[in-house]
Image 1 (cartoon, rainbow, N blue to C red):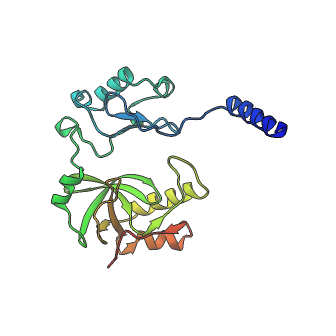
Image 2: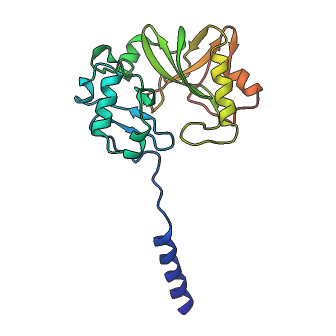
Image 3: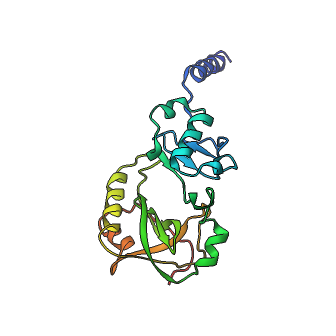
Length: 218
């Protein structure tokens, strides 16, 4: 009994003396519908509120973020380059042309689409523009080491490989499987650069850590 009591007291001391670290994002957003990502202080605009939609450009949005977001640490190093609109556009008061409902009207499964690169995110994710609509895209079948929310071994190399490869030629996205989008509303696609398949090339380079299925592929 005495030993159990000693262990319990030790546990309490350890618990209350250990710093509690916050996660990258606790699920809450500010009055604009976004939040700062803790590891790099990038401001992510998830669901623009009516207040956010009053901004006509990045400069006005940055002013609103400085005023309404409470993260003082991130605001000290904040500028317009640290804003990720996540597919939202100022063309119609921060409307989201890449919402799932809108996307389904324009895309179909097992089709190819000529596209242009908008933003390279990491080894297995990028944003592309098809017919003036931006689609955040998750590459089918491959999973590369993390290099955004956390840094995993070879994550940086995977990101550099993908970003360099996407800039080396003309890009075509090919949809496949049973679903156009994953649960995070990202387009699912094979990525062709000229006549080379990115998924195959990055696997050959040894920068894929896992493979997964979203359905039956062509």
